[in-house]
Length: 401
Image (tube, rainbow, N blue to C red; front, side, top):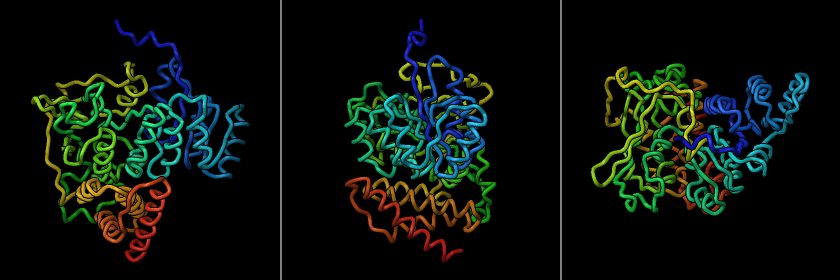
């Protein structure tokens, strides 16, 4: 008989990035289990109307928006609707809801470097952290993991790939992959919308085409990262930190059906895989309830409808961002922070139609070539590398646009 129903503690949850696709999926799972989870706080960036609707529906104690004007607007609108949610602002507000003593679990779903400080605040407060913001770990690497071990925080990935790896690894891994009998990690990816697009047409693809992911519904920035395979490169770096792996132990595999979310290859010849429909609610529900299991609302996988599973070697000529990320994973230090910052700048320029699709990789390569890589000693050094890379990328983009 299942032990799921025996848990009586109601987890209080802060969601950093509640208006994005991950945040909305978290809330979808939460409302299915009202006795297990309570929303303590929600944050949003510029979608104030959506955040207002979420506050009215879930009745959090706090809501966080980035600007003073946003605080005034949302507080007024909520008060007129009879809501008692208190609205606070800025990065200090994010840190407040991430580290508050009444919070059990923090969902880190803010996209990009903007989520780093708040996620670190949750780590240092020893929270259970559901990590979707891969950039925070990519940027800060060893500092992040040292803080996790020092504070006793529980770190659970909710990217479908890293959650799949987590499920396929031993529940009590003794340390390195080798000591757990693991030969390699196979990190799957769909290949995005341009997997078969002729190379000579890639420069002219539009943001709309890049954001039309064949399997997943995601935000615009992450969708572009998926189209360039930078998302897979960032996930490779993240996997190295999460699972104490060397870059050579992580192999990227293109899997167009997005049914096998990742695999773990053991030295005895066994390969364990986690399969499921491409729906973020599966890894979210796994992490929310871990080590138990709860209903996520996801339909059962029908293997007869899937019928076939294809796997391909990624083409790094078509996807140079993946090659750049692998190089950076081997370099270490501040290189991942440089890579991430340059990518964020280039992707934004592409979404604003200031550069072509293939110029995203060119911008990143320029920044990596021109900026020196240092050691990661503290968070200040990480943020300094991030700022330098953005400045370098900005100069490159100005010359191109």
